Image 1 (cartoon, rainbow, N blue to C red):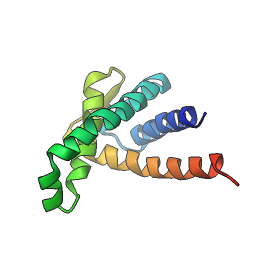
Image 2 (image 1 turned 30 degrees about the vertical axis):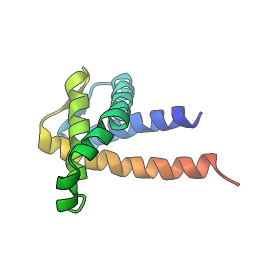
Image 3 (image 1 turned 45 degrees about the horizontal axis):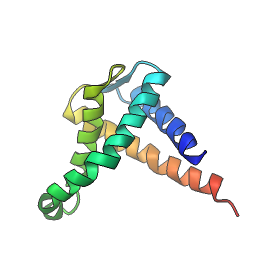
Length: 117
């Protein structure tokens, strides 16, 4: 149940990113659901590989290169999906930052909702 709620809220966050920032476009809620799933899949499979491969650059930039990796995952998802479009790498960087901020709020809300004691 927790996973489904997080997925739905992530799709809503993606719609909010598209509403707040013009560089990201989402055509419908169903497209946002698919995009949230693909972004999560990329973050689960590709991101760890990229983090390990770019570890020296990440250390030199004091972790700031992780923002670039997040933007690449966001941009890559838009490249393989219809209905989800990011205008370029700069738009992917800004969109991924906004999406990550929403993700922090979502994670906090889910922790409070499902682990209330």
